Length: 155
Ligand SMILES: CC(C)(COP(=O)(O)OP(=O)(O)OC[C@H]1O[C@@H](n2cnc3c(N)ncnc32)[C@H](O)[C@@H]1OP(=O)(O)O)[C@@H](O)C(=O)NCCC(=O)NCCS
Image (cartoon, rainbow, N blue to C red; front, side, top):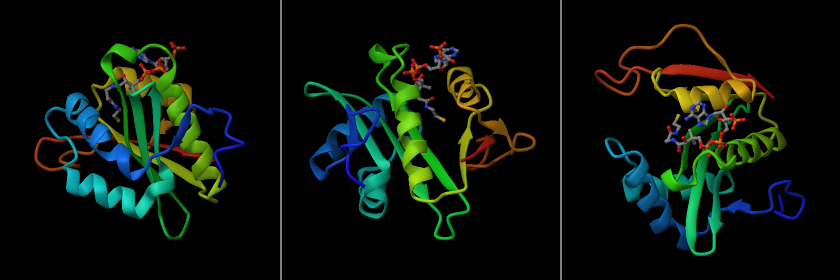
């Protein structure tokens, strides 16, 4: 897909040279469990079209990472981050809208994600986009003590 018909033209697919900046922002935002550069690199290699960035000048404002299951029944939004000083300006919503648009365009039937039950800003955003919880909170989802709420949205 080209970036030309994109309703959010400031958001584009990540390029290899963006990886250090994405890694830096990821460490800043997810202090307790950031992606290692290795995992980030592997996601980029495997899901490049679904690793999206938004910059203001040289500064990375946010990124979103999704992945499409081979059967296209689901696409997972694995990560969404907006720099602290850029929050509350609609960037998280724009990144999610573009990620969902690309999943839909790829023929994915349902978007899914895992979110910490206490993460009110993220859950409020996901609900505003139409996501709803898929059952109860799952204990130890990402390892001991790492409970998550799974949310889904039909595309
Ligand atoms: C969640 C996150 C991406 C939202 O990004 P953002 O750019 O601030 O969000 P937006 O400005 O686009 O807000 C969109 C909607 O989200 C909700 N929202 C955003 N911040 C919120 C807050 N602090 N409290 C409650 N709702 C909030 C609102 O519904 C908002 O719509 P509104 O502006 O019409 O009220 C951002 O807070 C973030 O990076 N958090 C840390 C990383 C994280 O938790 N990622 C998600 C992991 S699952």
